Length: 404
Ligand code: PMP
Image 1 (cartoon, rainbow, N blue to C red):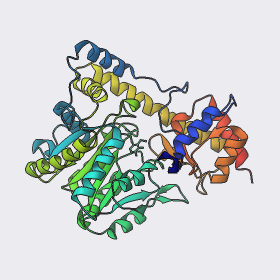
Image 2 (image 1 turned 120 degrees about the vertical axis):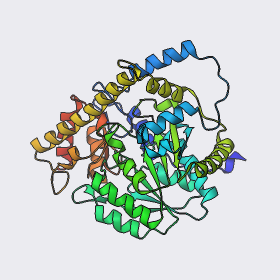
Image 3 (image 1 turned 135 degrees about the vertical axis):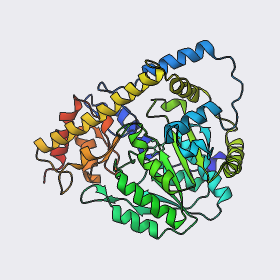
Image 4 (image 1 turned 180 degrees about the vertical axis):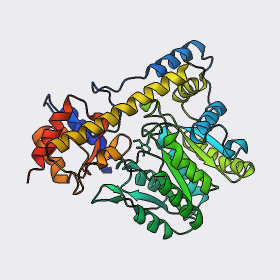
């Protein structure tokens, strides 16, 4: 029976990693994959995570199943991180959180929930968006459409385009907003723009999903939540998909969360009952290890505890990315290379690991063939793949392929 099966197309980004591994050039540079790397090009386990894991090894008493939605302590910590301890949403118990396997798991649970409870609702995604968004929602039977996002002349937000698109989204549909560090562009709305987007979404009667995969990678844990909190101020109901892959470096442990916020606590109970039904039929209950690490770190909030150690490690990752952004812009400027007609300022104005470089498909191909530099075909660069050593090589190579 398997003879008739056709191979699936390779994943565009993970496929590039395989090609990179096979490339014998010792000077090769991988700027394709979406993981943080330190200045030596490694993705280390954070010291706060190692310490938490040691505590778990010593103290864990059972490997019995988790509740369908994970541990209540984890849910509370996630909500506090999203909204702050004193928020009305927490005070009035309007949120419920399910621990999911990664941010991808949160998105897939949200997708199944939508397809089973909001029949006919279309999901609107920014153009461009994370390559997996369309696939995750379509696989659950949710139709997807796109809204304008990036101004190609400046590589900045097409704010008027976003607002105009929202005005045309039918009531009852769903819109996905990237909470911060938009993937793949790195372009986030300002706080004023967030407020305007959130009111437009509320006025139209659209359900927002905030995909929050990079909290703390942009400006800071609190600062990065400002957009989400603007949505919370304007919209009584919404979903949040959190990932702790990047900010805790827990990629392979698969730790994330789906948080739903309702108008009141009773409604939140009803909606979480449907979310739990989805989870039960999907993976039954979540893996515990990653969430236990996050819970151990976040709840050790005494001075000098694991939480402050983790926050310092997170700040160091963020600072490294921002230093690389400045050095990349300076390297391009020095060589007289302009990635957009308006210059390279956008590189330092964007947030998070990614920048939509404006490099064309031909440039990307030439970088790979002539310089063994691997970038996603759309021109998305992982800034965290840059190091003080490979940056001059990268800038020279970009200058070379962009020569008229
Ligand atoms: N959303 C966005 C925007 C992402 O970039 C990613 C990870 N690349 C995810 C969700 C999924 O995160 P996870 O690896 O935790 O499944």
